[in-house]
Amino acid sequence: MRGSEANPKPRSAEQRPTQRQPWRRLARRIRVPLGFLIAALYLFELGRRAPRPAAIAWSLALVLPGLLLRGYASGYVKKDRELTTAGPYAHTRNPLYLGSMLMAAGFAVALLSWLVAAVLACGFAFVYIPVIGDEERFLRSEFPGFVAYCRAVPRLIPRLTQAHFPDEASAGAGEGADPVAAPSGFSLALYLQHREYNAAIGTVLLYLSLLFLRPALATIGLWAR
Image (cartoon, rainbow, N blue to C red):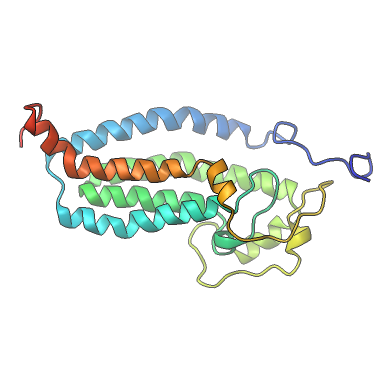
């Protein structure tokens, strides 16, 4: 019966084991100052030299796939509630992180800045590698199907073909959880719930700054052409 001791309700994120909490707290503390550092470095590099139109155009080959991948993945993932194995999660276990890395690499290309690339790489290594390991320990403890999922789907670099899981309906349920419905397609409601549109807004603003910030400031005398 639902809610009985023999089959308790799924635990909320707050009630579940705190295996991820130390790195999650640290990552949250680091992300904001790291974001300000990268923004300051971005403006510094933008001030040193004007972006080249060809570099900006080439950067789109990384930024747009990364943005689309993040948006696509956000329409599938149900954090802490199900083991998501459909959509992009049938190709890589961390499509959101992979999308972020592609976007970051793209903006480093747009600026042609090895300094920005190095800081971004160090930031991702320091924050995301431990966080991914932390999350995987949590998922392994909560979802019996996670071990089989790991055997079929790479951690980051995507496989070309889609992995299939014959028992997807039951593999996604954690211990004591109600059966999980077979995965459906992309959900716009989930995309909006995760506010992934903020990534698109930020991308547009960054490209506008690449194209127009220097000329605009130079026009009002705050920046030498």
